[in-house]
Length: 255
Image (cartoon, rainbow, N blue to C red):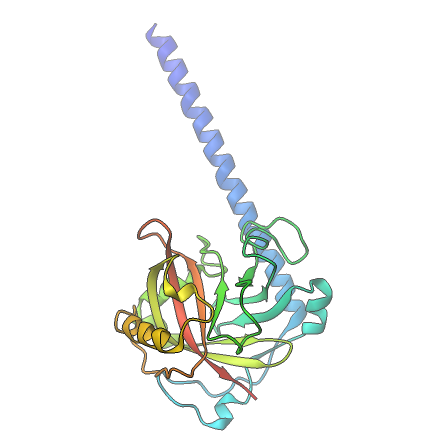
């Protein structure tokens, strides 16, 4: 009887091991597929340009520092691949260098690649309610918090002051022009938070951002005025149900 019980337990253990191993292998292959997809895309449409002088935290950059982004993107090729492309998000010396799309709702690209195939990590996307960048008071961009820190998985690093100091700006390029995003706030919020409005009342939004800045996970010297347009990057967080980690930046048009 004991031998039968041991045999059953051993069989259950082996089955669990095989299933778990299979699941881990599946996840690994999905990550590899996404890495290969985006690496090939970056090599095809992104080109490094002469890097502008570094922007120091809180600094108001002179004109020569805002002349261009550190990369250029071939949007002609991108739009031929997918007409939903509206931009490219880039953070120097990090994994963030991805196309940005916008669809009829916020579910379309959760697990969908530019070519329409299934992709666990999906595609970075703009909230369907937003107009073109710079038109709305708050431009919302979403990306998955992947375990290997791809997509927006590295955003949680902004919970550390040291990381912010190393990466105080991002860049957002569009077919119409390029922008620098001077980061101001990092915070954990819920999905019902005011930050998920695209055009909140100007005065109320300014007050909200001022309060949020005091609670920010990093300290920034960048000042916001009520007239400024902001970009909000959003990804999943796990402090509570429906938690999200957001990074907010001031939108600065480049020449």
